[in-house]
Amino acid sequence: MNITSVFKPDLFTGKVAIVTGGGTGIGAAITQELAHLGCDVVIASRKEQRLKEAADQMNANPNIKGRITAIACNIRQEEQVKNLMQSVVKEFGKIDFLVNNGGGQFQCPAENISMKGWSAVIDTNLTGTFLCCQHAFREWMGANGGVIINIVVDMWRGFVFMSHSGAARSAVDNLTKTLALEWADKGIRINSVAPGTIYSETAAANYPTDVFSASREVQPTGRLGTPEEVAALVCFILSPAAAFMTGIFASTCSHS
Ligand SMILES: CCCCCCCCC/C=C/C(=O)SCCNC(=O)CCNC(=O)[C@H](O)C(C)(C)COP(=O)(O)OP(=O)(O)OC[C@H]1O[C@@H](n2cnc3c(N)ncnc32)[C@H](O)[C@@H]1OP(=O)(O)O
Ligand SMILES: NC(=O)C1=CN([C@@H]2O[C@H](COP(=O)(O)OP(=O)(O)OC[C@H]3O[C@@H](n4cnc5c(N)ncnc54)[C@H](OP(=O)(O)O)[C@@H]3O)[C@@H](O)[C@H]2O)C=CC1
Image (cartoon, rainbow, N blue to C red; front, side, top):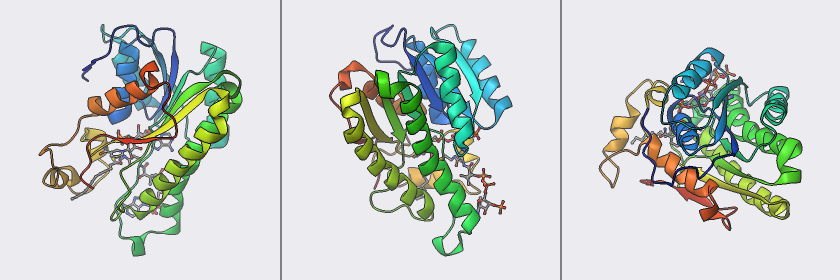
């Protein structure tokens, strides 16, 4: 795993972050960049063994200054989300940053999506994100402020064969704008970030065909983005450089 930091060292020393899905792909790059800059990071997702191995691997990197801790959490389960937020406040004393990165979908023509599949994607990407925001607010941020980033997809002109995810992420973007207004006076900033098309082994494993190679062909840049490039954007928005930025949608390079 690479760290390609353009930020000054110790930018986030003393801060505590939660990154859902922080053990793989884009989430792992965000986690490493935050930890490299001094932040303690809690990574949270469903597959506990893989999550713990990722934390061990990242903690073994001598370039990392913050500590990375794994807590199993399915963001579709409210009790598990509540436990995550409470555990972090208990162990680390606060939650400065929340990156709602955990999520995903499967490719399927809209007319063939089953009710179970539709619900799985909506519950993960929309309801899971909402629950994380709500319980971070209740357990810490409502009284103390903080910064939240919701990872979405670039769905503005539709998201072909991923209608469930496009609808859920569009809803998350609107949720982001509403929470930015409702929580501005609590010292909470919240923005959404859409990665461009970003290859990682775990992301690619979710698709039966090589969608990433197909996508490369239509990129104006002639290449896909990297997880590290998304991590840099996320760290910028979390940082004081974006202190007056809230309710905004930002994207790394997109072809839509
Ligand atoms: C030019 C080119 C541009 C191409 C452009 C390509 C750009 C890519 C841009 C975006 C990329 C990414 O987001 S990459 C990130 C990808 N990462 C992920 O998606 C990881 C997380 N995803 C998931 O966990 C799953 O996809 C998700 C469905 C959300 C949750 O799965 P779970 O197994 O936990 O859910 P369950 O509750 O068990 O329900 C699963 C049900 O979903 C349905 N289901 C699941 N997979 C299915 C499938 N392949 N086809 C039909 N239906 C399916 C079935 O009904 C399943 O039930 P049964 O029938 O009973 O089994
Ligand atoms: N790669 C790309 O091109 C793009 C990705 N995105 C989005 O970026 C985010 C990260 O994706 P990426 O790194 O590429 O792919 P990955 O498949 O590597 O990451 C998805 C992560 O989400 C976690 N996750 C999934 N469901 C849940 C759940 N119910 N509760 C907790 N965690 C969950 C997974 O962990 P576990 O299985 O252990 O739960 C995994 O770590 C996703 O939301 C994705 O849709 C958006 C646009 C483009």
